[in-house]
Amino acid sequence: MAEQQNPFSLSGKVALVTGGGQGIGREIVRTLAAAGANVAIADLNPSSAAQAAAEVVGLGRRATSVRVDVADSAAVEAMTQTVIASLGCIDILVNNAGICINKPVLDMTPDEWLQLMGINLNGVFWCSRSVGRHMVERRKGAIVNIGSMSGSIVNWPQPQAAYNASKAGVIHLTKSLASEWAASGVRVNSVSPGYTGTEMTKLGMATPGWGETWLAMTPMGRLGEPVDVARAVLYLASDAAAFATGTDLIVDGGYTIW
Ligand SMILES: NC(=O)c1ccc[n+]([C@@H]2O[C@H](COP(=O)([O-])OP(=O)(O)OC[C@H]3O[C@@H](n4cnc5c(N)ncnc54)[C@H](O)[C@@H]3O)[C@@H](O)[C@H]2O)c1
Image (cartoon, rainbow, N blue to C red; front, side, top):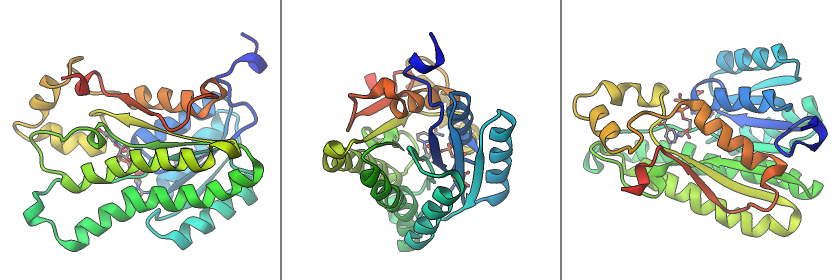
């Protein structure tokens, strides 16, 4: 298929990936760049973000990196302006930055609840609002939020009520934004991974009783690879998904079947 006719091509587009310095976000950065996009990486960790940007330049694309705490709405606004000044516009936003806290509800402090919600849910709102304004003005754009199967099911055996609630919020916020912006040419979708091999799951896989349970409850019997998630993001970010908005694409090795 010629490059111009390939609906999965991101040639000439600019993508912004939050939390793009490591894990799933880093693989999304690679996958979007390989599909032709110039990529901005925004992360709390400036050195991993800079490394990700260098990797994108190595693939022959333009790149920039920005340090941001997505929980800080003013910092998010500055991030958007910095990326537009550096790469010209933003066609694709991937809201990937997120954290997990494994604690029983009765042990969670107010600060821990607020920290998690501030990053996982408020962060998606601030970034979508800031970049969405730019996209609505241009009457085009695609936002892909990284939800989780935890937004649809409750994980077992580890306790993580705040995380589960935040991801359910991300999935429903996705549908709400999709509804508001559909007529403005801006699509908003989510990808919801199951257990995926990154820093986030490392400790759990090493915790007696957790890792084996996770694999036993996953029909495919393995963890996902970050690239399994990244390719789903590529689909929703690209013109191949021109008629998809407000949808949640679950990529979980079948976990939510059972
Ligand atoms: N790994 C899994 O099994 C899994 C499953 C479902 C969903 N997810 C989701 O996928 C996304 C990526 O997870 P991961 O496994 O790659 O995690 P990770 O911990 O490996 O990477 C998270 C990245 O986000 C950045 N980050 C954290 N807080 C930030 C903040 N306040 N502002 C900006 N950047 C911040 C980190 O610096 C890091 O680069 C998260 O939203 C997570 O909830 C992961």
